Image 1 (cartoon, rainbow, N blue to C red):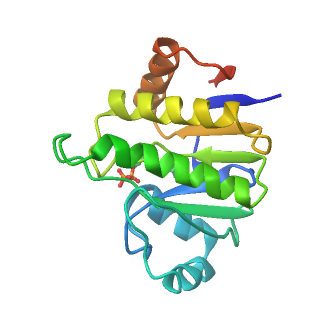
Image 2 (cartoon, rainbow, N blue to C red; image 1 turned 180 degrees about the vertical axis):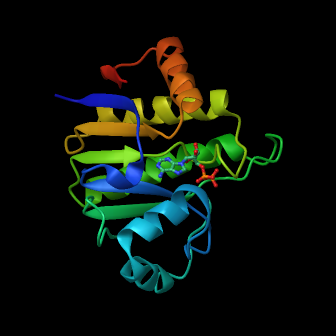
Length: 179
Ligand code: ADP
């Protein structure tokens, strides 16, 4: 059965087919969740990323997971928030959509996302959580491959925003909120 899970977690510890990395366009690592994923995966991840030649904002590229419990890492640079008039919302939707498409192409049944762009990139959390859940819900409804999508919230404040967004949206896929 299909499901969306919202939980408080470190994404580097989750055993799913693919975790998504909120990367930057160089794909060469950075701070926040990107740094944590590279540290946990080990140096082989950077080696593979170096060969990818970067990635445009809102697009996605895939690598193996190396020392992570996840088999794959899908790297997507979310948009930097610049006030909302630079196509940020559509680009964030693109990050979720293109990551899910890539996961499907690789036969992933379970995928975990961090809260893309709401850290160093300063995308407003209420808007970002709505875009994330609406896009995941829409995709999951029409997917015959992906079964469970987890949103790994790193702090309580982020988790609350996703819970609130799930309540405000008319979600089609059942949402499970785990403490
Ligand atoms: P961005 O540059 O896209 O804003 P950040 O990594 O700065 O990316 O932040 C995105 C979100 O990921 C933030 O909510 C941040 O707290 C969270 N985060 C940081 N480390 C982890 C982790 N290990 N697992 C899950 N989420 C994390």
